[in-house]
Image 1 (cartoon, rainbow, N blue to C red):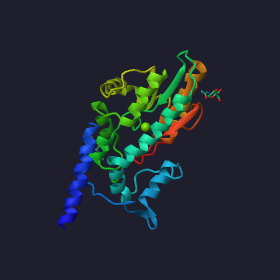
Image 2: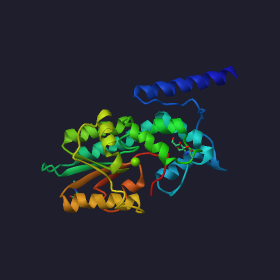
Image 3: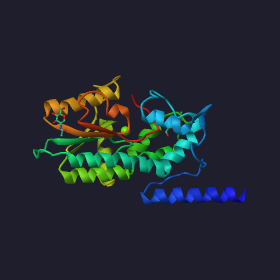
Image 4: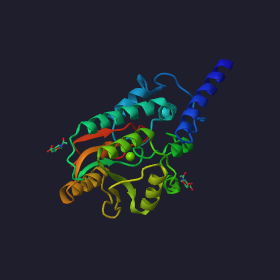
Length: 261
Ligand SMILES: *[C@@H]1O[C@H](CO)[C@@H](O)[C@H](O)[C@H]1NC(C)=O
Ligand SMILES: *[C@@H]1O[C@H](CO)[C@@H](O)[C@H](O)[C@H]1NC(C)=O
Ligand SMILES: [Mg+2]
């Protein structure tokens, strides 16, 4: 009994200090550390296999994290693994960017998604829970409107390196026009100080359309009407990187929290 408590406290304090190091108020307390794959989502299939299925886009159009995997996903995103998985993606993106012989005409762009790519909503999810509570748009908008989402540290490193390599940054987000000002403020406060464009969603124009349609259409405009070349494109959703004008290479960040078609 004592040992169990001690291990839990130790795990909690490690996770907490790790979070604070990056300025994120991680509330890991309601979660219980689960070793290894952290339980089964259905008989014979672990939650870590569920996550691989999600990341590889084999499990699609899911609505919520399986209840059995809530603890697993919570510990994954608040722990080191999410950070390490993000690091791998951003590292490969950097190697690729560095290898490109950029034409120095200011038209090479790198497209970044915002939520769970550039900024992290983990404080919101850590507070509201990872799986059981259904998505509450009102509560999520209230969180976004606070404008205090922290940067994802690994993506921020890539952002800085891309700027020094001479790429222009375009943010392409599903956030609506009404949240543009707070998003600008949030990006700047989080350390993203410079960009070529910040494209927010015209909700009346794209009403009932998928993110794939919206994002493809906006990327097409960038390339075909405005003469940019999308060299790289990074996002946490497959809908950030599928469709047309996806860019020469795409990079998929981990996100086992939600699915956007
Ligand atoms: C959704 O969030 C709002 C704002 O925080 C809250 O007032 C409302 O009760 C929530 N709805 C549900 C169904 O939990
Ligand atoms: C990007 O893709 C386009 C279209 O296939 C190609 O013409 C161009 O050379 C590629 N650019 C780089 C930097 O790979
Ligand atoms: Mg996103």
